[in-house]
Length: 112
Image (cartoon, rainbow, N blue to C red; front, side, top):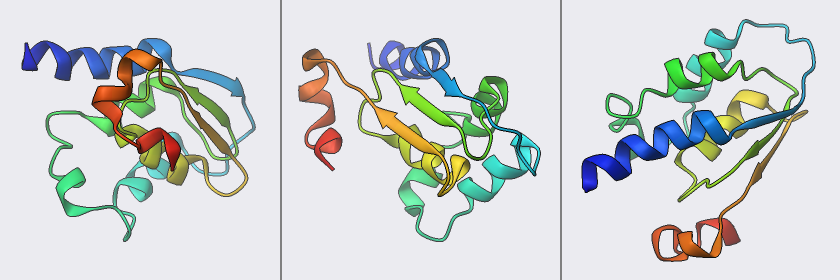
């Protein structure tokens, strides 16, 4: 069941992420995501999970760029939310959504 939950979260993210507004970026998506993944405030334990949850490939596939507004449905504990926030930058916006069914999984992540 744990494997299903892990794989399902990545698939759900790709399927459920909606790009609300798309602005022209000054950097290619890959460069933005790499910079977000190497952000100095990113916890080491989250970076260790990159092999299992390939954020570079997922976010490049989604076409996330700077200044975008992104709605992340079923965001869970916010693992991708933080990466998204650094990718879209100060001029972008990330909206995190969780259904009540996710409360046991997310704890207070969606209250931050």
